[in-house]
Image (cartoon, rainbow, N blue to C red; front, side, top):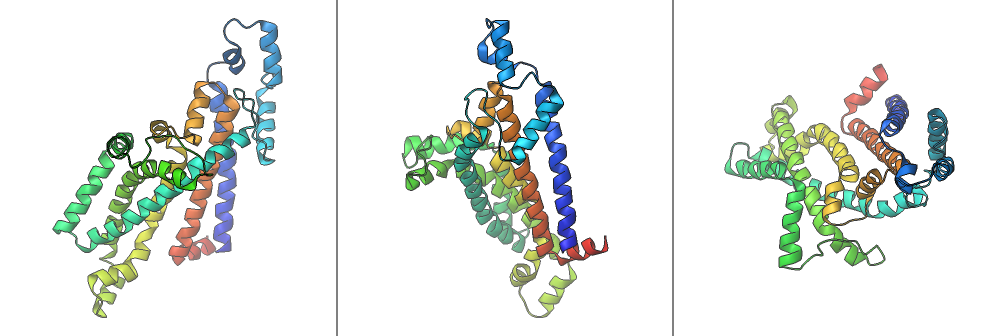
Length: 317
């Protein structure tokens, strides 16, 4: 087990180094000068040069990369060109929206997908299976931003149950949860549809395994054999998908945050790109990449817990 974890940690470190280099390079070759954007087209050359010096844009690219990466290792994400505020403070403020939203959406997706996938697999080919998979197909096909607008139209404008947008802050916890309810549903249901389909397919494959036949021979019903013995072995692809989904929910909810006017990380990246705030784009993107890689590492650990064969393979490798 320890050797397996050490290999995954080494892979995590290499991935982070490679990701930081790619992020810096992509942002570096992007057209446009942040200093010129900030001062406008009529800026004097002396003023432009002074601002570039203040922002350290006059340093060679390798020096700026080293300064950026060593600063991040020490917890210094730099200072926003646009807002003149430490990026770490901006990220901490936006995480109070994006992280609870991602966690709530993933919990809701799993809470819907697990019983739906089990129900469909235990009734393969029957009307219940067809109904669940039809609903899942609809959930996959419907764009989440269009679904979000339908939720706003129905629950915010017509029935006035939930707010249509904005975030009041966690000093008003009930109002904050109400503000995140519709975005959570808009993000979770499409992910739940994907999870349910994958879980159903994995469970159906498990039904043909010898251990399921043995469990049936001992007197268990198909549903009992599936829940007690098949579910754990069918979770490997589901865990993979859950890790990818959490990364998407944390980093890829830009459209949903725009629809509901939520001040999250996705909206911060969108605004920073449009304002040529390169240090914010680099640091926030690197933070999100770090979150994705760590989630994948935790997913690998969950594999080893769910399937002991992976631990034995790690010892033999």
